[in-house]
Image 1 (cartoon, rainbow, N blue to C red):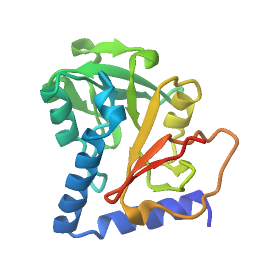
Image 2 (cartoon, rainbow, N blue to C red):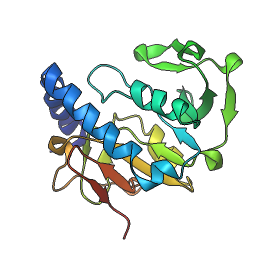
Image 3 (cartoon, rainbow, N blue to C red):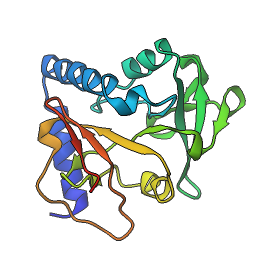
Length: 188
């Protein structure tokens, strides 16, 4: 199956989850994340503002703020398909942009260099046990990860974990996969 078909199937599967099951999985993912060593060791968290069928990130951001961590979220640059992360201290520093994405308002936020991000939460739809993923198809994260020097992690339910995915030369695996059951270290 090609990536486009895999994406469609994964989105349909995620959308079909009951609200009760979704909330339960989100709570388990958050607990696994915030009790991990890499979370505890991180001062600056890079994370997207989830929407729709994606696993909620708002509560994770609130935990990070409560623990005194800095939070930065990406601003997409569609012209060159690059991500620039900006530190936010409030959800009021976000605006709705194309595709209904919530992104930082550049005039109200401070740009954060990728080297300053200790822990990067990488979104995706499907993952294999080596940390490779099928994302949303823009290639933004693959470009960002190409020279990202610090820890990467993704949140997913067990149903998003598959035995094999098509890989391309520019695909960069994520180091840790957090499911509702466990944390998978993909680093060899």
